Figure 1 (cartoon, rainbow, N blue to C red):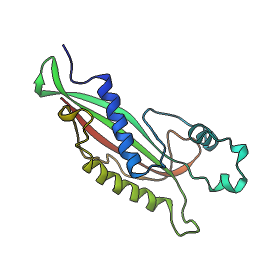
Figure 2 (figure 1 turned 120 degrees about the vertical axis):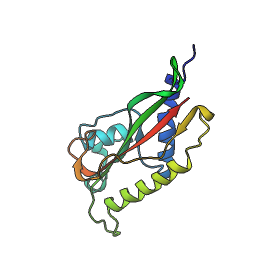
Figure 3 (figure 1 turned 180 degrees about the vertical axis):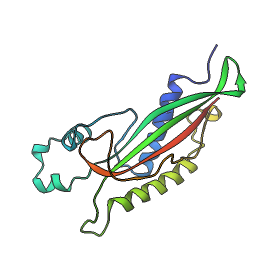
Figure 4 (figure 1 turned 90 degrees about the vertical axis):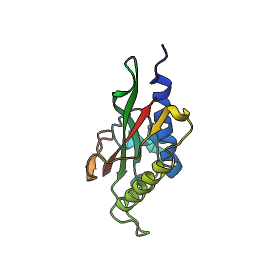
Length: 176
């Protein structure tokens, strides 16, 4: 029997979330699997394929780490929709967004306002892009939710030694 929820649909869900985030911010590195960086140097080397030795001190000091990591959280089969051996499945993903803290730059901007601008834009884009045709009617996406408060001046579990603002957003998908 063919099941509704497949590995291909699961991966396509993470790819869809990544492309939706990158449609809002094409410069934001987005990873669809957990990736752990041992520090700023490792982040620069792994994400930007650059060696810190090739950067001037001013370039290194001005570099601000920011990224999003999409992780699978859980699934739950419906008790009422579908059938016993092929139920409708609800799948949840977390989107961990980190923006290195920068209080005020020369241009008068700051990292906190930029993160909030990104969150609002993502909220709206995820609402607009719920009808994405990846699997037609068999994959329904729900609006983003925010399960906990934004963390100010915190260290990401994915990047050691860097302080920034962190927000975790979640998206639920329904697989038929």
